Image (cartoon, rainbow, N blue to C red; front, side, top):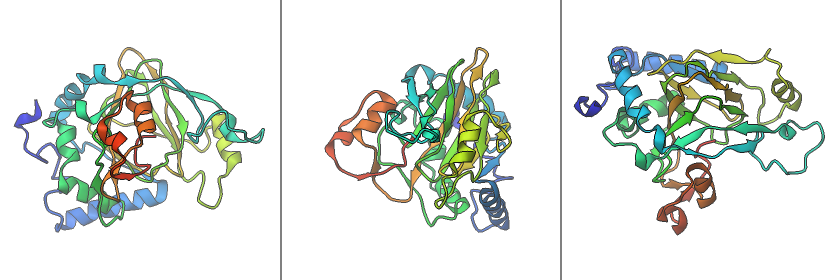
Length: 284
């Protein structure tokens, strides 16, 4: 168990110098990550978790799988109501099945590698710097913030756009086959939805699609609001697991009761009290 691993000792700090933000190596890493985010909206920091801890990372998250709440849904790429009236050629009329499940934060032990990482101020500062933000905050939501995304064999997370701007995730268990992260960087913009290109990808055209060979322990930073993306169908007998570290530029963010119940099948008093800042930093 990772209880013997001190904070940030799980990170390969020789490659990723989180413990010393003033070192030139920090600036080099941040600069490279920013450049990749600017070019493709995605950056992968391979073996962010030390290789000798990959199996600990996998085991800690694998035992959480039974806690995952599953709700199979019919969705479109925009996460809008599928019965919303749309023009005949609008890509939002393409309906897909979403089969990923989520383990809530209150089911993830505080001693786990992913929990220690999520709550680390140094890690949070590093992520903010990589995204070019002055600061980031943990969500105040007791169920979101840190979650484990579980995609069982035969299921997928279909093509979609994120509503939040910045996504931080880490693969903790790879599928036997399939479960590939695929994305189309910059396929739309704030000025142009580019429906024709989105429609072509949904129809099976892969000219704009990039694929990532993610491995356990890799940290992925992603800008998903303008990049169409998905996790392809998981094949074989092993589920795909990934930790999602949700942060906000604002403190005190709590999800709505409706969205929380949709994701986790339950709500807590914090979701019903109306306190805190409501935001779209929850999972997509």
